[in-house]
Image (cartoon, rainbow, N blue to C red; front, side, top):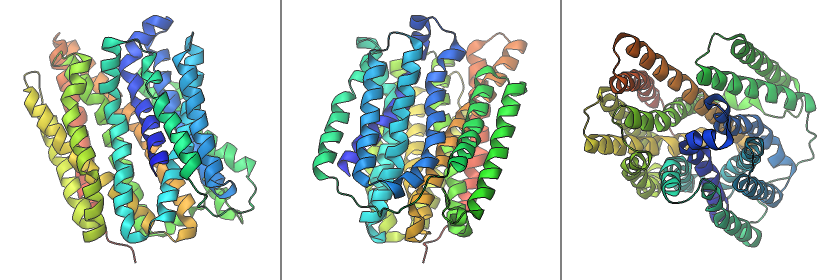
Length: 451
């Protein structure tokens, strides 16, 4: 587990760490803001395309083969990124990094659900939840410190020792825990899955970047993506051995968990982007200081994640998930009231409440969602939930940043007050997130422990 979780942390850290350096990289490589954004978009796009394929690969190859491939890709991508002389090389490196993470995340969950009995999975998934939250949350803080003291290359170099530890530790201790089946990979399903998930993630990301949701390329990309997904789903139901077994959706608790997971990731990843934007543009706080203000919430989550997992095992899902959704909703109530004169201690406290709530919801919902499936559906259920989460994150960031920018622009047209415009944009975003958070509170009331 240590080998898998360390690699996962590095991958998720890399997902957000570079965001804080995009402005600097835009000047270094001489490309515009839209082009440099692809360093973040391509990462999500690769995860959205490859995670569904990982579901069938986990049934075709051994745990060790999958692990070695995942960590090797992450090491190659990270070294290539650190020495990248031009933008195109850095973009390719990011795609290779993401390919490694796309294998690692489902593999880690599959190992947890294979080696831990149901009454211990909450604790194990609590640790994984810690990794899934701490990686993206610490990314901007550590990257900000690196940019203030070293060059952007070190955002990649600092992760190499951890990846090497993961590889060596895994080679020594990681056994093969999955059952290998003789299954052929259906090329048509892979193509439809790639076009489907890739089209939707690309469409919403492009729409978010340009603020151009009405542009023909964005609309066509999203429509083609949805059509490909429908064809993919129809094909899976007619195949004897489908690439992704959609029978998982026959279980109501699985469907409920997928919807709650989508809302959680949509809100969480957009929040981790919009909150720093609000602080830097409305309160005029430096990037590194922004990271420090958000650090206590992330640390609290790391400290309490294992305890939350044990509470899940002891008292069941509803006792943990419902209070968590309520804390998230309370956090958004405060966030939506923030303006240009908000005290920094208020942001620190609100973020701590928010991260505590997300920590209680995230891993617990995932555990309960997968616990509701029979064992033979675990690889499919994991691939489905991981894909939906990554797509939700990409859509959340694109949609919420677009809404933030649109409100900011309309405010500036009336009154030339940039700080107030940024505060108005973030307030609207957090109000929308609050509505979604309340939906999650209601859904949590229907959560129960699977038989």
